[in-house]
Image 1 (cartoon, rainbow, N blue to C red):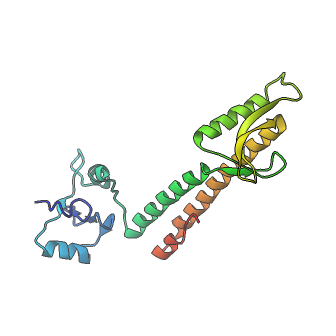
Image 2 (cartoon, one colour):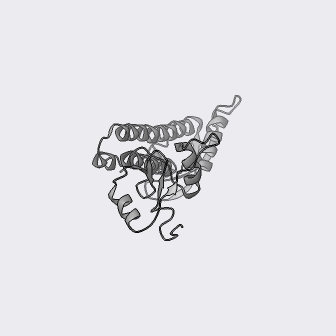
Image 3 (cartoon, rainbow, N blue to C red):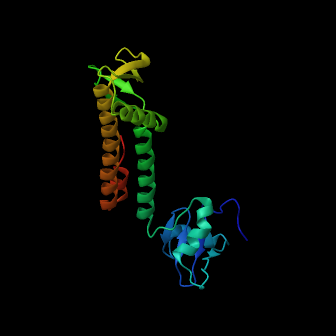
Length: 201
């Protein structure tokens, strides 16, 4: 019988061949894992590892069950930690991308918003600046903040809005490049300490 105080996040699944999955560790553990030993000593029994349509007790079959709880089968606790850290970094990267960027296209540093809507608006403004037939004094207003902290729609020439577009693209690429480097660091890590050292800040 399931102990709903522990299931599913402090539970165990065991395959017929002896493999044991710990939801607390989010990975496979050995049969003599202290947590598993204590679990059985308390009178609880692990849930039988589910089988696929062919009757095989595969990781994929267990993942179908665990997915409903946001859990995944990992080969080792370190692999689970790596997956967690990579997920945190992905979220940090996504947040950094939409946190805004700075451009000196207007001659001095101005801050520009970079939410998805802002990126679409900037792309549209850049495209408009490239249309044939624009007057030589063509301008477009775009939302930005000056060095005094004042937000406002400020006129940008074609060259200026294009520079803002280049700076915005560079900002996104810098965030993505940083994410890639940190994920490589995680992939190469062989200890929990090394994984934890791969942080966004």
